[in-house]
Length: 549
Image (cartoon, rainbow, N blue to C red):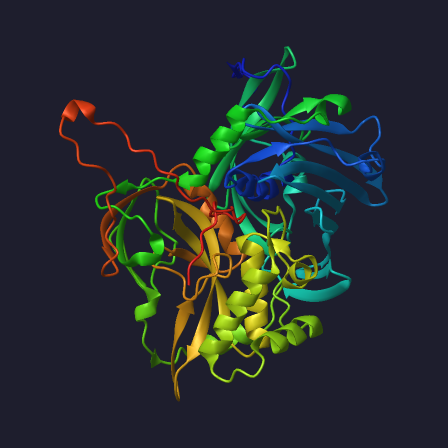
């Protein structure tokens, strides 16, 4: 920006303290925040007793930040930069300790990144502990070769990946931009390695004019910078030295510079819990009533309010025409020519440890003497549903870790099922989308398993171990296939997607029964009081739980 042009002044009156959340938290907190938003009830409690020990590495120069959702406190982070030989070590810890559906669900996040003098990534350590034990990742970068080691449940797995360009972490993005020189009008595209999904993702960056931001009661010049990542655009105000003055997320997340004591004081108001509840559900416009999802044999749903490009709607039980999805009951599926790609869904993957001896032994025990694929697949659904305690967790679902803890929501049920199915010789994969519960659609994950039906014939069958459904009902609307690396694409839909149920065909003899009483005088019409049954919540993106078979 030419020196002769004075900076524009933009004043922010809503928050009196400056916001300095590092950009590393955009990707991770977006995902963790998404999980929190998609829960029906969440509030924060006191930090664990060992918190002081965990955070002892932070000195007086560390920056503490309260993490806020729509202006209310939901956690905190602390970070610092430590000079080391040949570069710097960037350290950050975060805490989200929630009580979800009455169960305490703490989330402790730790990231350490070692960079050179130009803030190029050399190595990193990352861990996420939902209270049942940490899943830890460490990585080293040698040119374009990235070596990642994953440790969970007392075991470890190492993978080597060749990248098209050197990776970076969000943790050092602002410093890298400042090191290269911030200039109004400049655009950049960088590949960022997200340890939460073990994948490289592009970040598109646009630098705008320098503005004077009112922070902590004094003006501070900073460049306005837009960062587009995984379908979300976050706006940050970054100084010439790489300090983030303010950051705004479209999901309503932000952070505020606070004292250590202020940052660690956590409480979420009833208003925020109500906001989270409203964000969790997509209440559709109903042209026809849908009373029980398991009775639906065909559903036509119109999508609006979002860009549908990049989503994977085509499947054996659903077809997208324009913006209308036509979904049919999986119980009507019949065998067709074998999918030539099915065998790749037998191989182990990161966090789907189907070759682990404990997973293999558990799969062998569950399928027992069953010989046909459909019987094996159903036994796995019933066993996984019965095995896991239904609690929402903020975690990276590792099948081996889930088998150890036996706790989780739909992501944990799905990861364990897919690993067990593959270990039992059944190709299986992950679906991500929406499922209807009590008249609303919730974001959800469930497996799809290949059922062999004769030589070179078969079909992909959606099942739902979280809901104990074999097969899954017709209100399961798939948007994507894949793990956490695909689920980040769901984030831009939150609060924007609108659904209209155009048609709903139900099973015969399942029409809603209208209960009432005959009255002689319309003036005597009063509501009839009925005691309705209730179900226990299952703890998933799709809440509350529902069963079915």
